[in-house]
Amino acid sequence: MTNYREILRLSHLGINKQDIATACECSRNTVANVLKRAGNCGLTWEQVQDWNNKDISDKLFPPNAVKPAYKMPDYEYIHREMAKSGVTLSLLWVEYCEQCREAGDIPYKSTQFNKYYSDYVCKTKATMHLNHKPGEIMEVDWAGQNAFIIDTDTGEPIKAYVFVAVLAYSGYAYVETFLSQNQECWVTAHVNAYKYFGGVTRILVPDNLKTGIIKNSKSETIVNKIYQELAEHYGTAVIPARPRAPKDKPSVEGSVGVISTWILAALRNQQFLSLRELNLAVREKLAEFNNKPFQKKDGSRATIYAEEKLFLLSLPERSYELATWKGGCGRYSRPLQGWGYAKI
Image (tube, rainbow, N blue to C red; front, side, top):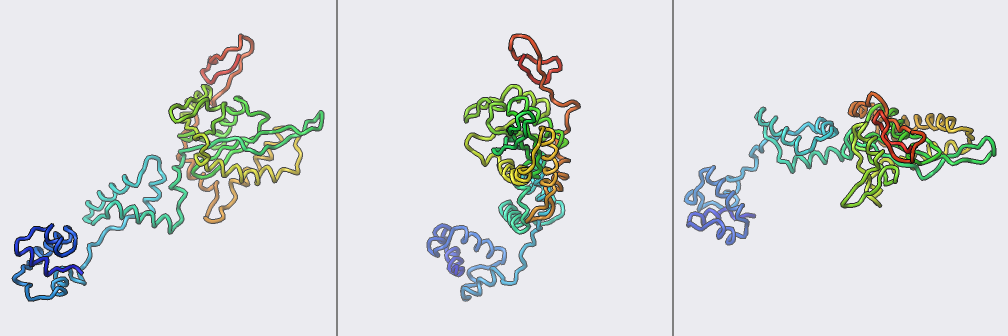
């Protein structure tokens, strides 16, 4: 226990706070706090020299003293605001302090404010909104597992590649199959994904395929010219995942595995004679996937997407077009509409 009596005695003798702290084996802040409390209570050494240490302690720090009532923030509101683009916990704390000052309430310090918010998130298990903002990121990739259609002439299976796009916030997905992974299919997949989502995210996160990214290193990122023009047309920014860092695309990586089960495995015993027939079946399974209820929380990807859609950027009046010019010398040339490049 702090020796309050000795602190007051040494202070009466004119000893400085640091020497008192050393003599009483406590911190200088403790000494300063005791002397401040004594001054507020009007206690002097002459008054307390016959008191014991406990009496002085009870006088300085009454056990039944009313603690200041701090204003508890509305963390449900704060959690909703955190889901909005550009909103940070520091900004919300500043706003909370301003509201407290206007109302005459006592605000919590930022450390306590952040701690209570962390407790709220853990208690309510409302972690989704912490990872991504609605309408912020669309992650895209080719699935590792392929689908197949049947060649009507030979009866042999033809490989179909599976494109997956996922809205990182809601997990709402788009899936389409193609006969190639070339530039035309890559661009078409993005255009169709944006149509399906009914809007555009602010950031586009692809893997490091050459159809999208020419170079991605610590010092330099070079986006494929066609892919860059597609991004400019839709008003989004291409930020590729770091090489050998799959955690940069956790939503699409996780959804690829689930989609492989929900769609490809479910269709494994069916035969399709055309890509259109295959994609119609994929679209049906995709609707089931997006509307499937979550196991550990209420709602589904579709219900969260309904909220996220409000934050998506509007689609341009016309879709991006990858024009193909016939004839010429094999050069890359911009079409007259100014949408994309095509090999002549």
